[in-house]
Image (cartoon, rainbow, N blue to C red; front, side):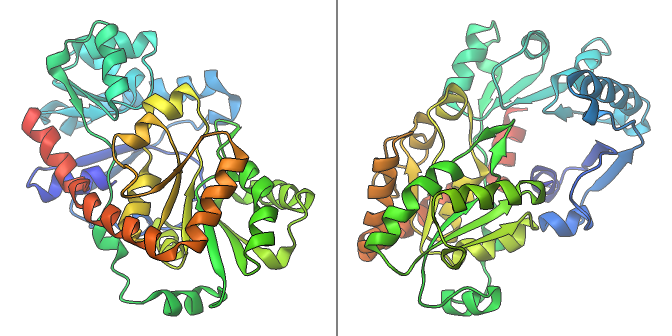
Length: 355
């Protein structure tokens, strides 16, 4: 949605084509993502077989690909742009100008497509190296990390006002994790936070753990995890999935923002997390795993790093951030200045210029 908005703001005619899919979003998509209505959003009726696993997902995807091919605008478009290799695959045979944006290591389908696409957009340096090794010409690969809409963080309210609005204690030292509990069935950091937070509380009695963006169906499991770690309900709050613009309010109401990704190949080399740029834009102190993908954007002048998968190191970094307010605020200020280079508009400009 944000990239379509950015392409349209550059003066291009944009149509975003999506399949019908059951999900948690009840609001209008433009409102939910805080996006201007300056492009067309087309929904194609496609069987939603995702619940049947990988075969169901691929079947739905291929039907969607075929349906999209019969749109009038498909044939008049100058560029067909997608993150789904299987959606684009049959279009190679139709001679369309294809741009493939890759966020993961190439499958056999993605490798075949990338070699024949007009351009390949990747989100990290390591991902570029993987695609070059897979036989994709280096000259047609564009490195474009994820980005942020800085305008959405201009709330017009200070931290105290936001805490009152959101029902958060004004005297708390709020340590926040914004994001899902799991991705692809694997934990993303909440479990480690539950391990270290009792230690944080023993040193900083008014510390408070805020978890925002947990899926509703995960709420019970997360509460049980916190209970097993002997964290009282008075010391934490869980806010289940909310629109993006509301999550930004919780970021700005926090004292420390946590990004504790594990040290796996995906997180270390192939990701470019939206959360990173949103944290930077919020102007709040960041505590993050020390991973190559994070180092592509941040350094010690902008964030507090800790050794990934080390709960003692995570606890130490959180305590440092809570007890060295001046130091971490200076880092947060530098991160906010730096994120001005990572807007959706600048990302779209770079991609369009290459295309």
